[in-house]
Image (cartoon, rainbow, N blue to C red):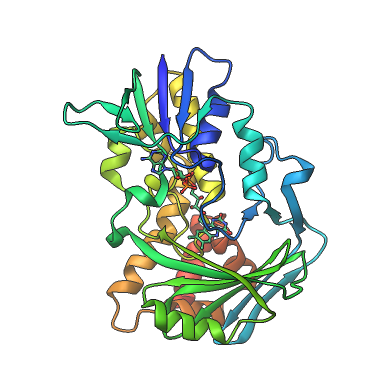
Length: 333
Ligand SMILES: Cc1cc2nc3c(=O)[nH]c(=O)nc-3n(C[C@H](O)[C@H](O)[C@H](O)COP(=O)(O)OP(=O)(O)OC[C@H]3O[C@@H](n4cnc5c(N)ncnc54)[C@H](O)[C@@H]3O)c2cc1C
């Protein structure tokens, strides 16, 4: 079976990697001339390293600490010897994968009037299946928020990631280690100017670069899931409360690859996965918050009153139903 994949991000390249050596002949088409150029803070929670090669060169640092602040007040501080994840050099990580699969760079895919897909409006794609792994670019503003970050020379502890939440912003900010020092960013349901003002309070060090993009926060788009043609952020695989999208995009690609290999319904396999449930927990909390007259109140209450271990498990999408019930109780009370 010939499979065309649109987009050489974590989702598209992992899918090609997982299908390598099977009866599926995969070509990935990527608009840009190299992978990993999309703005991203490069945080990767543990959980995919057994599925994919992550070379030493692609690891900037190992994350062993995780802090959460609410309006500047430290509400969770988890630090120890346990490896929680990585800061990866995303372009290097994706380039490593790209070298193992068949990718055509400088190849933008569009749909012709005849319904077929074309590369750079010229070459028709001959494939039995086309899979969209084209990320937030394929999503309308209703399903995404603006996120932007400054790269600075501030010497953030390379093993520590910091998350910031605010009572007057439905969104999040972060300070992550970076090879140059730190990535200090913010994303949410607010104007650029409002968020930039908030971010100024967190900015440290000399600004070296500024970058931004939109990021999904809606959860899974059911019509896309039903079509069985979408993976990664294009399907909505981003944790709405934290903006984590690399690991879930890779996991969605794994489920797609296994479904194709075993001739199973991606819809059914994805829907019964732990990943689907975890993503929907985040998305539901975000939707409930948006509908509430005071959108951030319940999230703030939860952060202030709950067992920090449960907050951490929620943040990384690793929470059980019972733990969620406990957390929700704290959010309501
Ligand atoms: C500022 C910011 C910081 C972030 N930080 C983190 C973080 O620290 N950790 C984390 O886990 N997530 C983070 N994310 C989210 C994460 O970057 C994405 O969710 C993740 O990259 C999604 O992977 P993907 O493969 O689905 O899509 P993408 O990475 O968006 O890849 C899609 C690819 O498709 C290509 N493409 C699009 N249209 C076409 C077309 N028509 N033809 C050919 N190619 C096309 C694009 O050029 C792109 O390379 C962040 C997002 C933002 C905006």
